[in-house]
Length: 329
Image (cartoon, rainbow, N blue to C red; front, side, top):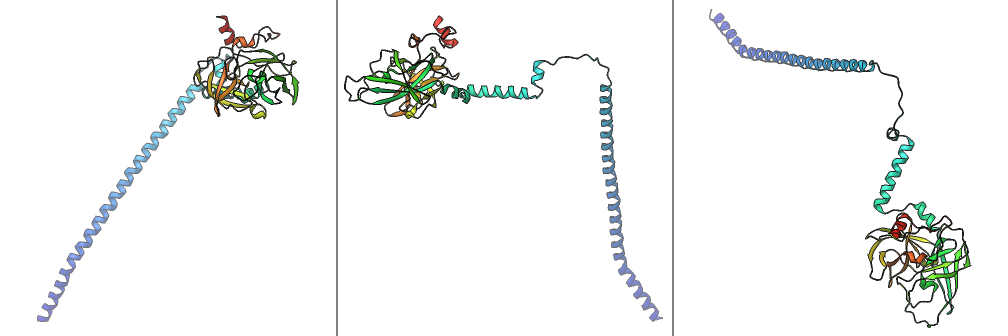
């Protein structure tokens, strides 16, 4: 009997130890099941929201297609209309692009003080190298601008023996004057000159003449205002190496009728042309400040300089409209 009681008590004790473990396992299983159920419900809600948005987009697209279909179905007349020039200009055609490019180039040219390369090349042909020979046996060179009918404008101190500060005899004279045309010297003679008695003076100008040459004559403006910082272009026979171009800006007007500028003033540039942005002759280069090759002096073109230059066959000398308006007042 005692043995049976002891066996029962041992089995009861073992069962009591299994109860806590069983509770833990049951609790964990319950929480896992609840988590799985929550996750499934959340996925279902997300899928439902996505399907709802997709249905909304489909409906909106169908409404848009319906509106477009209705708009295309509206009756309209069959009359034709000629497109305006503005509409043609906006059609992206080659002509429109060319016009736009031309307008941009013109704006840049105006704002930056540029001159078309083609125009500069054309104006180069209007200038020539001149040579003078004096009684001392010296040869000098400079530049002259062509005015048409064989007439050139240049500086007086090249074609007339003026005082230049050098220790030369007082009876020095110019014995020969030549213009270089197609690599050959042709005779020229002095026609008119200013009243300068020394170099770099407002009277330091001269008109010379050769036989009529096949050169493009320059247009002249005698009323150019020479406003401060105005872009200019200088063409001259620097160092007797042919006509070259130099750019610069107008500086100040001097008391003796000249204008200062910062543009190259190398030997041989005297008599070279000063052009404005239109390629019009507005002055001549007559000298520089001492040994400074960048600080130069300009002699503005005045009507009196052209007094012995005959009119062109068409009627008037090659004056710009601004010059003609100025002289009319």
